[in-house]
Length: 589
Image (tube, rainbow, N blue to C red):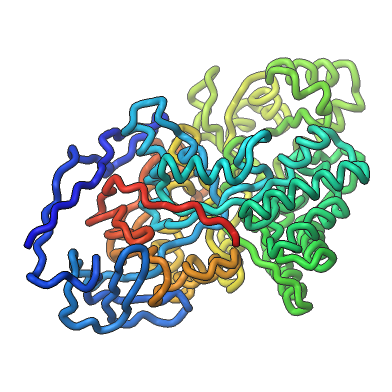
């Protein structure tokens, strides 16, 4: 007999100014599937693939059977019947990738007020699907539900509208703090702290996987260690975790300047703080996008992991994630002149960028001591961003010939020192500068640690996206596994599947085993490749730092994902997005 199935497909191929290559769909059609006279045993069988189970073991030849949402068979299934049998001979089959650090919720939040197909495509987050991502975790610093909303409200909204991948959420300390205290540099009173703890408890009861913050930023650094411990103890009572963009990733916090009177916090100080929080609160702790930034901290990844491994040996459950790029998000928009330490929150937050710059210039002209301090601050920032030879102008309206040149090169052209050139570019004008504050040696070392998972720190498709939003996992697989051999393929598979599942405490995903959810990735080792590059800038290696790629484009989906199943539904079929929104909201229970 024949069974007919209609699949909703997406027609729009353009979102927020970002083209989506390879995502072109036909109008909805009826798919006719031939069946035998007997009802088939399974919905889908992946036949003859090289199967990784996610544990870190080598691959084995096996078939994989799916029925409904679940994996119901792995092994030699003989001539078992199915509605769809897919020959994956020569391809690798593995559990779907779990991304522990995502900002793609902006895509999920698109509603149907716009054209239906366009909003469906946004919620699909195709840039994640083409990386093999099946589950994401949201919530760095701030809760992704509104101040007057709840995690249950967000879960219901997404479930009603449909989402492309599975999604889990954290409760953001930043949001909780703002609701109770506002954006102020102050410690909560005992009553305010109790109110904050109650909000943590409410989010945990609603299904949050833990709490998070971003201590490296201006507003984030207001929170003290003691305050965090109190909130972490509340989350720990529900079995939650504490996740942090820690206070420093190199020589200083992002907001800090050398002339500031507050103590400098280094990367090692910040790691020790999160270990202390884990110990005092009795909670699992996780470091977001671990890295060693700035010339003084290059090569210090080994010191960082030694400190983490000492904590782990002492019984602290501490893990981390990383992305495989030497330029960060803040690097992509390097600011040599920071307004917060000079103008303060109360004054600076209400001003336009031009007004802030004008105030800083006025103070320089009237205060020689401040002008001298400011120059030292800028020179310190240049070191923290990787040096003047790794800082590239990516946009400059007054003189387009500067685009693609380094700060060092422009200073030589203008016959000025680095501070004078930096002032001309960013205080007198609005140059956009991208820096490369990390080196490959540190990336490699972090990759070799069995408690550090790859993660994107990436968003949905959009005009300001970092290439990691489109290419993190295929880049690591292509460059660092298959081409350079920094880590092995079984080790990589474990790091992106069962490791993040265990960090989150998810019991039915992360392995390719009978009884687990059918989140499954099939890729071709010959064609797997990231395509996203830095816009008009080099993707630097430690050699040839001044190479300039004029046709770079961060808005390119990755290639080589042949099939992707989420909860048993094919969302990529033969390398093409099917239009299915198969994701589920995962709430901690």
